[in-house]
Amino acid sequence: MLLGYARVSTDDQNLALQRAALRAAGCRRLYEEKASGAKRDRPELAWLLEQLRDDDVVVITRLDRLARSTRDLLDVAEQIKGAKAGLRSLAEPWADTTSPAGRMVLTVFAGMAEFERALIHQRTSAGRVAARQRGVRFGRTPKLGPEQLAFARRLVDEGRPVREVAGVLKCHRATLYRALEALDRQSGPASNGTGIAP
Image (cartoon, rainbow, N blue to C red; front, side, top):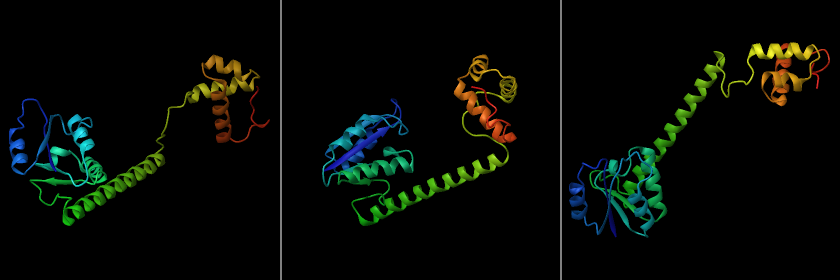
């Protein structure tokens, strides 16, 4: 069965042209909605995908009615394929998964999307390495700043218990232990192992 999907982005747009084209293409059932293509939550599209049976074909007037990005298009196409159904676009005859050529085109699109994701990952990784070399720190901001740590080190070295110093700095004692140990690793070993009084 041919199942038509029509979508416009706003309430003041009209579905009549899409509806007529889908009826002319032989669609026996239409699913229509007024929602942005960027929205993941499109109830009519979800309902259509749930209703698919073997050998059904989802027909759209243009690919951008179904998805706004290659990734979204591939996700929807994968759901359609999983239901053993096909996808056909009236404006883009090459986007017809009921034909070998259409399946090949979508496979190429999937490969290009995967390649694009790999490039983005590679660029992000290279950017992080360069940022680290410039001294940029990633992750959460340390609970204790350098001045607080120097103050804590001085108090602990004077014999004040870590629990008391942590209370003064308003942090958990485990946080203070970790921070002081990291400070000791940076400045070399302390004379009594960790230099931290319990």
